[in-house]
Image 1 (cartoon, rainbow, N blue to C red):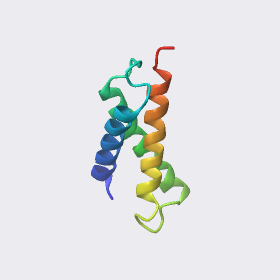
Image 2: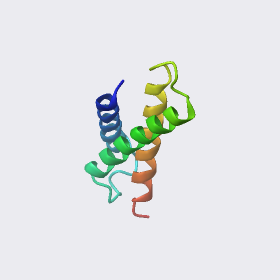
Image 3: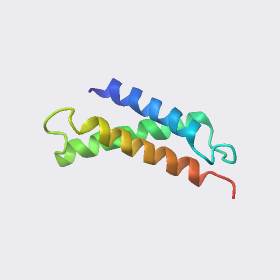
Image 4: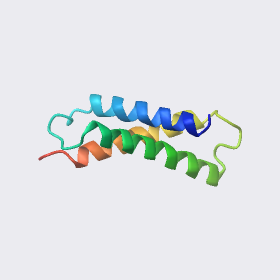
Length: 84
């Protein structure tokens, strides 16, 4: 998976995570902010995995780790921007 795959994965996770988040309706987070958080989360996960050497064998761990970090980034972003 190259950088275009990371961007697509982050965008899909960002939009799906925003749409499925329970605090979405009471949050000030817009869909574009969740999309940005997903893309940045996936990109940071890929860069960190490459630096640490976690992804030395190719795509085995890259997809699930990048997806999990992107989902966590979206959940935290939408959760922190919710009105309480």
